[in-house]
Length: 182
Ligand SMILES: [Zn+2]
Image (cartoon, rainbow, N blue to C red; front, side):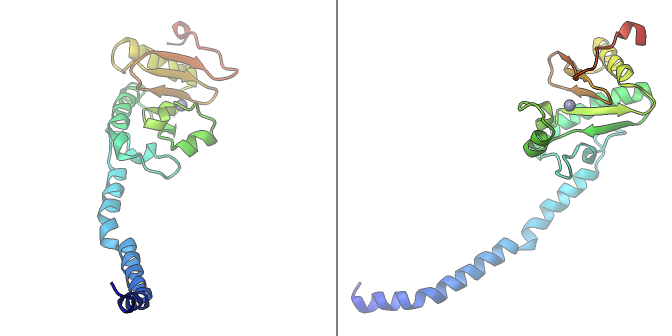
C-alpha cells in the first residue's frame, strides 16, 4: 500500500463509520427480532401452572420467572395445588421467585430457594400460619407434597421443593405443636 492509497482510506473512514453506526443502531432497535420473544413471555405469564396458580403470581417484583426455572416453579405450584385443594381457599403468594437484587433487598439468604423459583412464602385465607404449616407438614408425611423446606413466620409460611427436609422458625416465632392444631 503506497502513501496515496493510505490517505484515501483515512479520508473515507468517517463516512463509512457513520454508516456502520446507523446499521448497528437499526439492528439494536429492530422490533421484529424482539417482539416474538416478548409475546411468548407475556403469553407464558398468563398461563396457568395448575388449576389455581398462574406463573405471574410467582414473578419477582415484575420480573418474570426465567425460563430455565420453569420446571422448578411448575413443581412448586403442583405441590401448592395439593395444599390449596385440601384447604379449599385461595392461597396468596407473598413472594415466589426472587431476582438476586430482590433477594438481597429482603435480606434473603444467599442460597435462597427463592432464587431458583423453588420457594414460595404463602398465606391461606382464613387459616393461621401455624395451621398452614401443620397442614403442609401432614401432607408431606402423607407423601402428597414433596419433602422440602418449611419455615414459619408471624404472617406467612415458607415452603420449598428442595427435595430434602429443612425446618425453621422466623425470629420470635415458636414452632407450632401440630398435634394440638390439626
Ligand atoms: Zn421464603
